[in-house]
Length: 50
Image 1 (cartoon, rainbow, N blue to C red):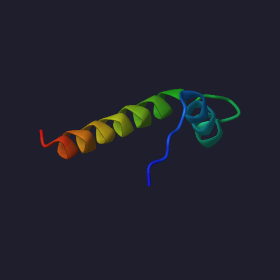
Image 2: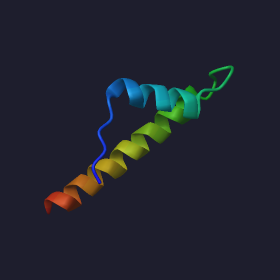
Image 3: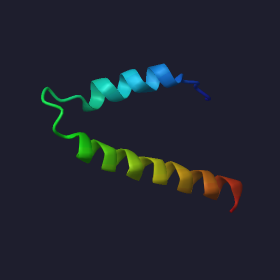
Image 4: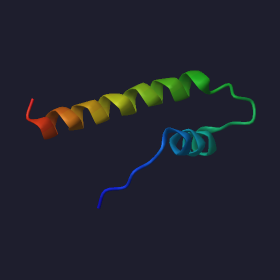
């Protein structure tokens, strides 16, 4: 099943999921985001047969 999501919805989800009261974990969150983007890129490459 294909589900579409808007950028705004993704931003709201990430804010709810990773928000901290003092926002000191921004570096940790940035590292996690880069890791996740890399995993998505790898999956896309595999799906495309690259």
